[in-house]
Image (cartoon, rainbow over all chains, first blue to last red; front, side, top):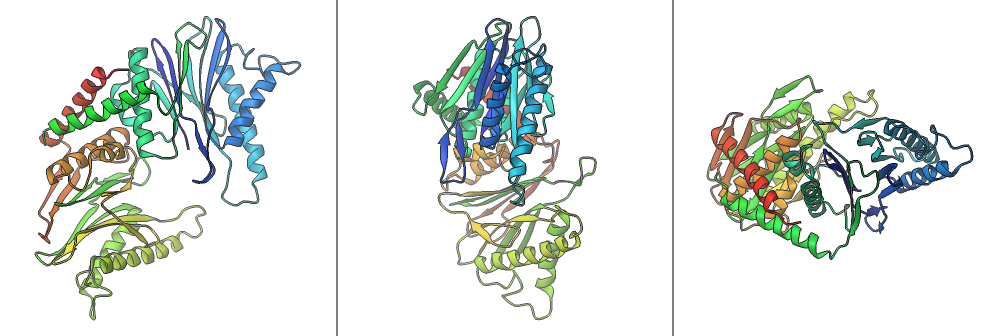
Length: 242
Length: 242
């Protein structure tokens, strides 16, 4: 499985993804699940993926191909599309088409269906930041003031902390902290989500990846935060009246 | 859906269940999901249920009938069975049989299958306390030193707090607190789990329900705990380094 979360705050976008993929419990690998397409200052598009690796890799590869294809235009290339809505539509269509083709290859395997979901975040210069969750069928929903974060994959373990602390006014540092704590809870409770992590920030109106880093298994900062959070939870727990 | 959790500590058993059932989002009701069978001082059996209400109600009703049936013996009545393992086996068989019969009624509705899982906890005088999770097929697993709690229903939201604080040495008060906080996270993040709650404690070697209470929506103690926990989480979050 996977856990990816995207947050749309007044100050910018925060994206966090794990990197574990597995085909059965005895076949575990590391694959990047966060991808960027950018023309710095003009547009930035971040995509995070969850689901069948063959679907997500082929979808990303086709998006790349479409950008460089002869005759690429605003209806086929996410680097030429004129709005984030158009970009989400192109990505949704590419995902749906890829999923259908691959599922068709599995038609003799009853009950099995290739599937994938994506989170798409970004901004074009002069337009608003947008954050979408794209379903396997290609349709999508969008983050709003009321629901400023979207999750794909193993989303339940890490939802309580986000529900409690995230509002659109949350600053980018706190948003990264909340995303990492949400991931930390998921990592502890579900083996199918694993380190390393990819964490990125797109500050409002930067129209580029403002910062992106890979957090390794032995990252001292993440380990310290994880330990401090455990300690804080235990202390709060002990002090809690019943 | 449902959230039920059972904890097996050195000091006793703690059981917590919500009461919300729904057939679609517009048909929501309150049904008890925690049931006790006891001969105080000799045996106590607690059962918590998750899944199709028709399956769980019929299963509980059949367990009652079997106790009072003519010719009831240790292979058919959970009040005569001589070990907790035998009790779990009878309950598992009853559940599996009920589920099969009801699923059969749905055979024309493709893709729909009636299903349910149970948590069974208890002790017979002179024997050890036991805690089982019974699957829809009737097979079961048991809580151990390494895994002292079992959950059914919407278990993911409330797992991180239990993973962090519960060990077999946890005392009964802290175990109730942890179970309630686990439920609180689930209630906040998932509408299909709802108040009121049923909370019960079976102290080791009591062989009876030591305490059981229903926690209503407006229970001042639970509300205070829920608010204090939110406040503690927020405070810990603010103080957390990144």
